[in-house]
Structure formats: structure tokens, C-alpha cells
Image 1 (cartoon, rainbow, N blue to C red):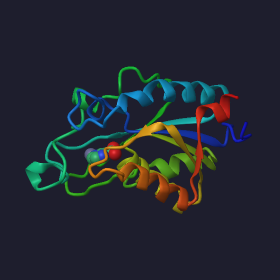
Image 2: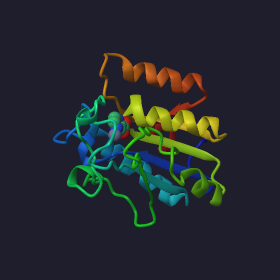
Image 3: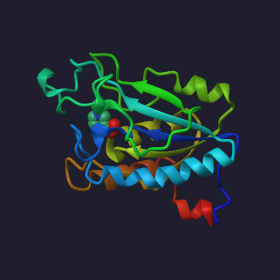
Image 4: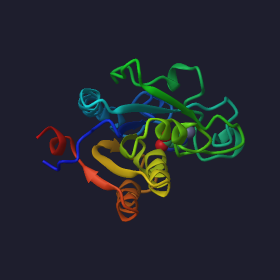
Length: 195
Ligand code: VGL
Ligand code: ZN
């Protein structure tokens, strides 16, 4: 037992667990859907402890700069208001979940859930000091969210059993994990919390 569980000064931050990033979606992360049952277990623990629960979502306009139609690296994905942008239907988000919609500016990429959103303000409002971050994808939005959180002074736990990588290049996910840990994130798994 790590003794580092959820409390009222903690937030569970679930990054981009959307249909579009799961098998069958427009930008599928290999085995992306495997994070869903694990995150549901974290959600239960967080709820019991009175922690804040945040879910970010990629919420692009149809002409987003990251799309191939505009010379970007990605197929069109997670266009706001479409089924592809919905949270994975198996993810049991409680009604009080704070939903953060990101990367809405057509002309700017924004991988971090903090970039151009109210996330930092909402966490500060609740006096949250410690974040538990999981979701999709390890090598893009999870990485950038974790690195921003550390820069902003949050204590950050990386949920290593609730992340999956795109791995455009083999090893990208593993390198992203090493980068997050080197920057100060602490790795944690469900079994460390639930004993
Ligand atoms: C993401 C690629 C493009 C992510 C978002 O959520 O990790 N990856 N847009
Ligand atoms: Zn995107």
C-alpha cells in the first residue's frame, strides 16, 4: 500500500477516453478501450474519498489544423458534437464530473487538458493539490497534460495501468512514460490504492 490514495485535495483526471481513440474510432489507439474498466475502478475509489473527477475530451472543429485536410498529422477525429467525440460508452462518469473540452481553436493544436481551458482555475477553486492522471493517449494528451500539471506545481501520479499509446514510432509510449517520470510524475497502479 503506497499510502497515497485519493482524498478531498485530489483529482482523478481522465484524459480523452473517447470513442474516436478506441478501436472502431477514427484515430484508434491500440487497445485503447482496455483503460475503461480500470478507470471505472479508479472512479469508484475517487468518489468514495470525495475527490474531484475531471474528464477531458478532444473537441475539434471540423477544420482543425491537426487534420490531414489542413496538412496536419492526423485523420479527422473527435469533431465536436459527433459520436466519435463522445466519451467511451462504458466509462462510468458520475454526474458531477467536470468536463473539459479542449483543442477547440481551429488554428492551434492543444494536446494538454490545461491548454486554453479552465482546468487549472477549476482545480485551484477546489484547492486540489494532487492529480491522478490516466487515459489516452500516453504519448500525446496524457504526456502533455502531466508535464503541464507538474510545471503548474501539482503533485502528479501517473496511472500506469490506465494509459495506452498511439506509438506512431515504436517505443513512443515507453519514452513518454520515462519523460513524465523524469519530470517528477510518480507511477501508481490500482493495486497500490485498493490494497
Ligand atoms: C490526441 C492525437 C491527436 C490525444 C489528440 O488525445 O492523445 N492524440 N489528438
Ligand atoms: Zn486531436
